[in-house]
Each structure stands twice: as structure tokens, then as C-alpha cells.
Image 1 (spheres, protein in one colour):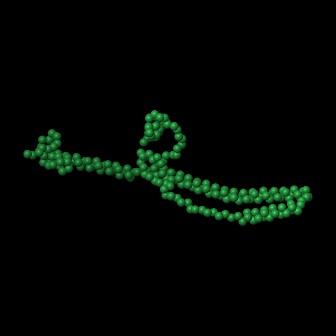
Image 2 (cartoon, rainbow, N blue to C red):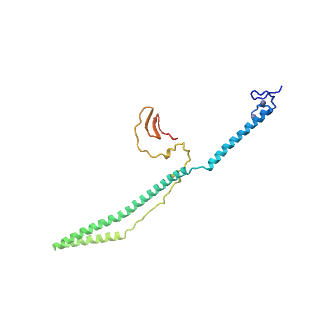
Image 3 (tube, rainbow, N blue to C red):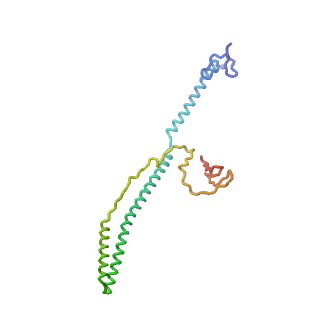
Length: 219
Ligand SMILES: [Zn+2]
Ligand SMILES: [Zn+2]
């Protein structure tokens, strides 16, 4: 007994069983079935064309520019830290010398005033002369030391780890917590299970037990 075509209301006898879907078709409906499947191929190809066009006109310059800006900020921050340390060490050097010079100047002035005082009074003793001679010898030694001051600077090369900057690809919809700014302010949250804490035209922060959620309306 011959099968009839599986298309609704078609009374013709089935002539073929389609390999792909195991349905019985008459000649006319087999052609239609084939045309329908082929038309689906065309629509799939249209999708590919759309995707190819999108790839051609792809614009992720903004994303790259934003990321470059972040890297640039990191670079400037590192430079600043090195500059700051450099300035500190320069000041440290200056201070080391300045302190010695200050002490020497004060001691010179002190002895000079004392001797001047005695000259003005036109009175001194053998002990005074011996003491001043001793003082001046010490000041000469100090002066020699100051003149011969040298510094040993030990430096280590700065080791920069590649892990200091990590690049991770995300989509706009994934919120990367690492890119959030540091904590600006903390506050006590209400005990209720669902409470809006703060909002503006774009963001809504709410407490939804046990999470603190930041909702971006544009996401
Ligand atoms: Zn089929
Ligand atoms: Zn048919």
C-alpha cells in the first residue's frame, strides 16, 4: 500500500521520503521542501554577511583608548613614586652635609666669641690659651673631615613584575570589580532585606540581603 504525501490537505501519493526529516512527499511538495531548506541557507548566509560587515566597521577604539589611559595613569603613578624617592634621597644627602656644617659653624662662632670677649677684656690665663688651642685643633680635624666627606650610594635595580599590570578581556556587560575605584566612604546598612540606599539618574545602590548591589540602568 502506497503512502500519501505528509503535507496537510495534499492527497497525492508520496513518491519520496526525505533523507533529512524522514517525511513523505509528493513530487511537488518535495520540490517545495527543498526550496524551503535552500532559502534557509540563504538567510543564514545573510547573517554571515551582516557579521562580516560589523567586523569590517568594528570600532573598539574607545575601549582601547580607555585601557591605554589606565595604563598611562599607572605609568605616571610609577614615575611619580620614583621621582618622590629620588627627591627624598637628595634631601637626605643635603641634610647629612648641612648638619655637619651647621655644628661646625656654631662651634666656630662660640669659640670666636669667647676669645673676642677675652681680647676686649684684655685678660686671660695659660689654661684659657691651652683650652682654646685644643678646641681649635678639634675644629681643624672636623674641618678636614667635612672637606673629605664622601658618600657610598648602594642602589638596586628596580624589579618590575609583569603582573603589576594585568590585561583581562571582558564585555561591557561584565562588571569588572577590579576596575572599581577604591572605597570612598563606608556606611552602616539597614537591616531590612531590600532597601534602596542611594541613587541618581543612572545608578541605584541597594541592599538586598546579603548583598550590596550597584545597579547601572544602562547595562
Ligand atoms: Zn526533509
Ligand atoms: Zn504533496
